[in-house]
Image (cartoon, rainbow over all chains, first blue to last red; front, side, top):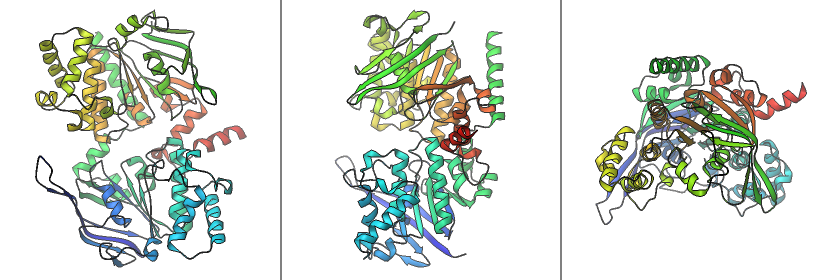
Length: 281
Length: 279
């Protein structure tokens, strides 16, 4: 299997400028992260807010540069501080953001949303651009009749389908998904997760899936990386990490995740009854 | 007798395109010391029915109900003064966005003392002492310092603890929590839920928990009401609901949980409905 994405000792510093009440500080948001993702696989990056998981997602998506370390895409080092990624690189890596309400321009028709990456990165003629956009709308479960509509006319789940369609317009190899379902209702979440699974099979896509939700990660991931305060505290296959979490932080995350298991509920109800009996007795 | 009893509640909103029914004939009742979860997706009307009880809906809302009683007293016909004595003292509420629920211009100590002075008639000195006790009760670290802190200097979890401290200040008999942990990380969510359950036991208060999260329901509720598009789909004790859900919508919701996935694909609610219709 070929490795699509590799990171070696990725670090990222944020400089907080000094103000009226203090000097400048440097915050190290990522402290040397290593990872590899093979073609057609999903790497899930799990962490809580402030862990650096989105920072890592943005570095992989070539939006923000890493401060140190090496990022390799298809085995070739990429450094966006030296040269802006060209159309070739942009059409390898695309991103889907968390909030489908904020990530679509409210004044841009859906058709133009989908055609814009082609206008910028390719020389495809207008008629073919339109054809491709319509085909992609159908592929993500919408229809050609949605071409001339505006984002406000769609529900959250539909907008996330549009955001996914836009990311796929350039036939990327790698898709970075930053919490793509956390703003969606449970039933819509299931539809979007199914769509992502289908698209991965169809186009042989590689996913980097940033999430805080362990039940979603368990469903979609092949490889899991748990990060906490900028460090990868646990890395391994989904089976390893879920069956046998080694790091205390991972165990803490698992323990805090609510379980919907019937036996667990039965035990809790029994405990509560016992506690109440003790109070009234 | 139920503490809060609502029968056939309907809430309509006047909109530019006509009347919109957000809650359609819903019955809710909660007993003393009981934890009731109202679960539903966005647009299910789960928050609106409780906002109607609290009198927090805008003027565009028309509320009708066959019965709306708290402890045998009719809420719908109360004068404003009567309602004020009830709401904020015997019935209190906390919300989803703890940081937005607090006033950014005042210290948390000032805000909780204000509640204590207005609602309980305490003096300044008494209010300060009681505020400190409450901050300790909800597990805020360094409570003396935190009374002098502004909301932006505290984390989301700590702000929610402040909100809970305000809500339990008057020893309410009913606390309504509207998505209290949705904006929080999962480890913080666990702490806040544990705190709510502990206080609920200690104070013997009834708790209505509005949520979209089946995990939260499983970890807290005694009884569950499932709502969809303004209607009640199912009501059951928590174990029966998860063990043997009766309504197709509930079954669909539970099977859409990623942890319940059996095959490669997650069943979706629409899959379920088309299946049911095909039978």
